[in-house]
Image (cartoon, rainbow, N blue to C red; front, side, top):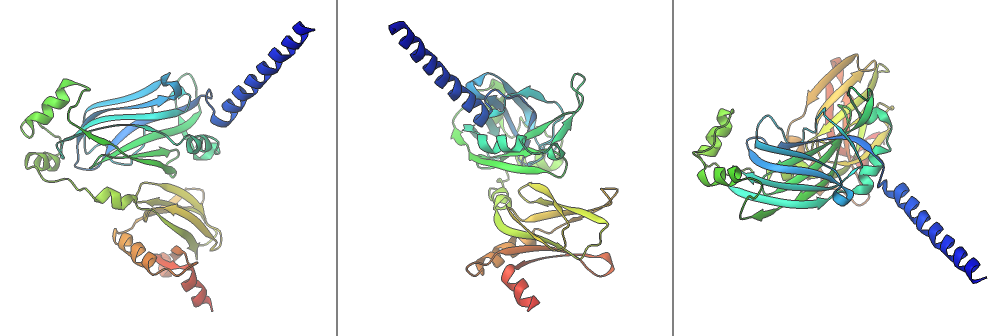
Length: 334
């Protein structure tokens, strides 16, 4: 009888532990492998030298990017890479770099937003990037892009198809006194500006003349607003509109007879009008003045009111864009 009770107790405990393990696998996708790539971009004319690592849970596997220089050919927000790995989803990001324009060293290890990453991998393949590989033709996944800006600002994006990129986190790295990844980085920092040589004449001049970094530009680009996107006045041949923002987020919006679509992102800076399933495509770049316009309209918002970014087809096929509010649209209709 005692042996029977002990066996039942053992089986019960085993089943509980197995259930907890299965629940962890389902909710956190601990052991689920996904296709993804990793790259690093920097703010324009703010070259760096560093080591960046995307690490899976329990530090079992990682993708590392280490560079002698990252400068103007590695733009902030460009999360594009065609070499991918089939690993469990990334869990942490490790960064250690020398900011040459600032003459400073930064370092940080950051835990990534796991639920957000899991939810992105559950999206339809239409938004994912299609990687080409000899062993796995048609492998779908995402590019993880890290953007380094002055002041130790670290931004992480996940990008798929050319029209889809989502900012998933912004971190703040800490200043350090020494660069311990390799001796060359510390030596280069100590010998600036003589030891620096850039392919870009402008960057070379900036470093050698010790011109201060643009500390606020990328923070301003990253400021988010809650607003509606409203697309009106287009014919049936227009299938969708791609919207890219200053914080490098982008997505595709269906043309749905003026229906407003709520978003939380930064100010738009680029529009692509797609016709006939992308066979015909027109693109428009927006001025940075819209950043000021959004801020001014936001200051004057009444309680319960919401910003609206309108994309409208005007006379002679001209595209009109404006920032307004839901209350102003209602007043105009009345």
